[in-house]
Length: 388
Length: 133
Image (cartoon, each protein chain N blue to C red):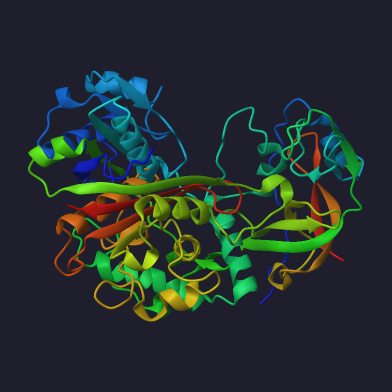
């Protein structure tokens, strides 16, 4: 059963906070939920489906529906890292199409900045992880695992640091218009490649920001969405995939986006050239480059040329991306960027992006997420949304 | 500019049931990989169940300990000393996460031939690392 046309995103909210030492994680989730419900024109009692991932405290959905006082008949705690919330929108559409709920709430919230958690520290995944004994002694960080993908991509395809830098430069051009963005300075390629090398070949400015914050979206039936106040944004297609080390048969320059993207484009009945705006997961510059290739916006190995010379800058390049400034400059709440990818795609389709970066006539948008580690094991989610 | 490989405190592997033989062999200076007796494929990281056919009988094999650098990254600003994380593709065909050691970290390159060496961790086990041939 296809989810095409079966559900709409009727409410969005990006928490404005970027440093939140005095807010609890549950409170950030709940404030984001309230914001998205107000944006949709719905009340908490309308919510009958709830979706969250590993950033939710305690027992995930159980803890959060109890904290927020919700009464739901459908729950889903699928966790594919930062891509989770893009998958949640698709799963919510599936649940709505199957009659399991009518109004689905998806929330995200976290405080990595206040808690000192970043991709530059070895994570403790707890006991019973099958891969950990064979990896943790070697100091794997989110940072250096993505860096290994960049190194291999440079080796296979001649991609350069300057080409990767253009991705940050494009994000910075967009972030200058976002008053909430952590980094608002417009950067040059020289600024990026002159920033300290943190894990070869990635410089500090190849990395996303670390920010506290959160967000939420409301997914509902098209007829309910039509009765509410916001411009209609419909789910047209979606795909999800995993990618790992394949038992040691390693291929790091192709991501799960190759499969999740193909599935989403097939369901939507559109092709990459039809997409007017793309939210592309941007934990690091290399993350964007690999996903653009795998989604088919350019051929494998040609991502460097695709992004160079402003290729991703709204009003300048062929594919406007991350017009809120993305995770690279604006916000990467809970170290998970999928929620904000959905939110900015909806803003674009509503025509509510900042006028300086709004894509004229934006009627078809894509949100792409990668969660986990691009090098070792990650989840990929692709969502195609349309206006009207 | 050279970046010497300096001694680094390596966290001890927190092993699970079934991992003992691999790390006991590492303490003896031997690198083990796994092969499935049902489908015949080798795999890494080692598992009790084959990731290619879910076969339940996998056996240890000794690797010759030679391979080439698939990719690497010198992590320069996330610890007390720079270190080189890498994936090395063994001549037996499987790739594994490791560190490249005993060299100028600035000279490491993709495709470089390497051989296994063993390094102490903070616990009872040693772990395989690789040095240029």
